[in-house]
Image (cartoon, rainbow, N blue to C red; front, side, top):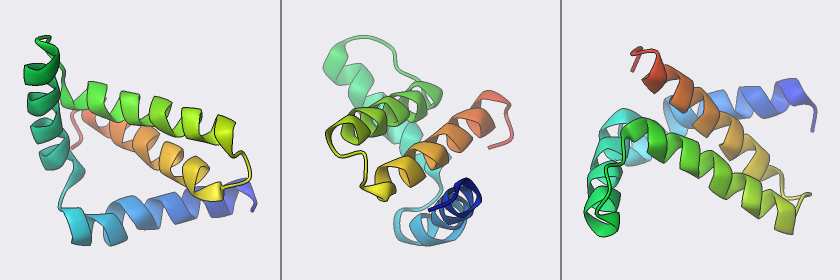
Length: 89
């Protein structure tokens, strides 16, 4: 799969497909951050959640580099992290 196709697929996933299934990422990431903060007894932000999900996908890519969904998801999470960081969310 070419890089443009990976990014286009990630765009479709984070703006249409997953948003329809799971709601807006910034809302669920805020909730995830609250749960992780309570569990870790350490503050976690929505941006942290997006960044850590990128790391999660990178770890998965190491185990199975040919499974393209991990690259697509990592690109999507990176875009969400950027959106949250810039206040565009």
